[in-house]
Length: 425
Ligand SMILES: Cc1ncc(COP(=O)(O)O)c(C=O)c1O
Image (cartoon, rainbow, N blue to C red; front, side, top):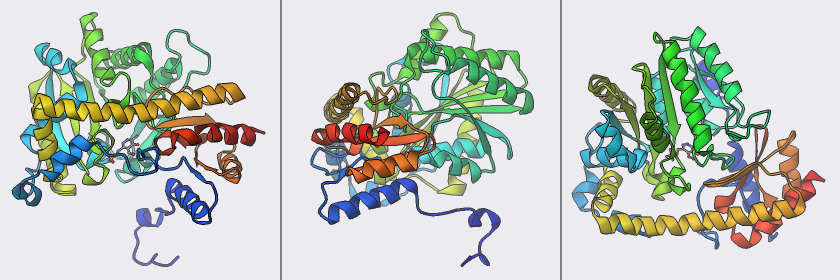
């Protein structure tokens, strides 16, 4: 193929035409042709009139930036005020209590949650080892892992036999995979996008998280020579009902007497792209928690050096402005009012979709929070084609079709449910 002379083996394997963008392009073509097309493709939150939804408090804060803060580099690890904020964004009200219990935090700024995921892929497993993911996951994970010479293995999103205790966590399958990895690798890492999962909108529930943490901790206790990292990808969690669900689960478990194994590291990949509607300003952080300060200090050094060697520093202006905004009670409240307004857009669309799908007997997956809903189908492309024939553009992915509630105007949600119903035929 053209360019092969210049490309290495890894480069040759990179194929374009991202599925999400190609289906979005099809929506745009249909719209340009004057058809009544509905856009359920993109992963950004749109107002009901189709414009990009903006958190006005963040927008005002950014516009007030002093010129020095726009122009200058940020420190390589990130601005201290932003690193402090990122710990609070990751752990919420539980942060203080966890600190009081003796936990320490490391934080490194990154270009979005993607950068945070890269930092973990680059440092926490050895080449050739596998990360454990759920079988339904955000597509780019694969590329982040491949670019760090890592593989992945999966466990199912939902249990095969219904569990009354934790219906949204497949514990048995998780434990099987965990045991396999623990016996074949000296380091184990799980990436878990919860609450408000992309692509389904699933949130695991406190019982599911408790069970997951218990399994993970037990595995760490039983294999003291193996290093365990549980990384929560919190990209959409500030739009969830339980915004700091994992921090709360950890705190509850500790208060119930859970022992923290020293070979267990807990991390959160923080993204401000959605929570602060600054997708393009590329701001996030990897926040790590461990009871030993020597461990978090070491991680700070390693992650900062990795950042330096990869993207240099993360943009300063967004770190500065968002930290300033959250540093006052008024600023934080203004952000919260806007966040609530945007969350309401999602809640209204989700409630409407669930009601319409129930009415039409369309078996969409459990969906609670965040930007997306999901229907599990055997033939995703064919199914999405049938929806497109009815003017509804969605994204076919592995195992199902993603419904971008974030992009759908509320009044077109019934049309989406009808298109799903017709496609099921
Ligand atoms: C599941 C998930 N994780 C992480 C990200 C990271 O986003 P960003 O790098 O823009 O912060 C996204 C963005 O779409 C996502 O969907």
